Amino acid sequence: MVFDFFLPDQKAFPHTQRKEEQDESMDFQTKEGVNVSISREDVFKFLSRIPNESVDLIVTDPAYSGMNQMLKLGRGKIIGQYSEKGDGQKRFDEFHDTKENYERFLGECRRILKANRHIYIMFDSYSLLSLAPTVRNIFDVKNVIVWDKLNIGLGHYFRRRHEFIVFASKGKKRLNSRNFPDVWRIKRITSAKYPTQKPVELFEMMIAASAEPGYTVLDPFLGSGSSAIASLKRGCNFIGCDVASSSIKISSERIKQFIELKKDILQAENKIEDIPTKKALLNGKS
Image 1 (cartoon, rainbow, N blue to C red):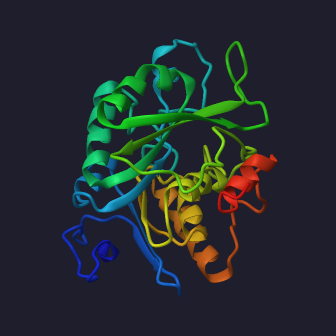
Image 2 (cartoon, one colour):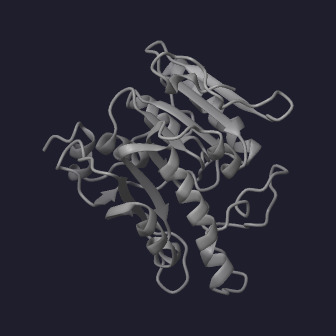
């Protein structure tokens, strides 16, 4: 697999995998010349292959493990069984949200992100409290965005209806518009076909605020592929990985169907619920 769309002259660079090393990888190109590459790979191995300062925007939803590991809630779980193998591969326990893991992860993200560019990282409340200082040590944190999921979810004590997104930068870069609110009312996916599936509009808000057509967007925790669909909708190149083979299987089919038929097989309807969020997504117009 070669991500050759990084370089202006379209020459391949050394982000390759020998045939015997890659379990699954998919490359797509639209009629408009937008490229998409996804692969099944450990996140740190994947990031280590990407050249310095070659990515324009990072949008990602890492696995949350802090609540289950630290809160000692007995049999209660926040997002399912972290130790469950599922498709024969690790799903959630591959990446623990420890300080050490995040320092390594964010260090790699800073290395591959171009100067004067943005990064968005999703957090639950526990992980935000424990890991926000780590983000501030590596990037310039600008905002904490609240994702209001509208539908109440599971939880201990107060039931959860929101998640957080840390918005940070490497250097200076303005948003594409000043009309973006810091609370995004986007209905969560219910009866999802993939665990922890996020709405496409959630990632599309990030891309609309921080990217331009032709930018390269990266998500090293691909999951259901929502970030890839959002990138395609915004005319951006996309690269991503996930450790689960089920992620690559469902994401590749989702991307293929979207490119060929303009149909999202995992999300039929727009999930944005309030006018300010809709207006922000429409090119930031008030």
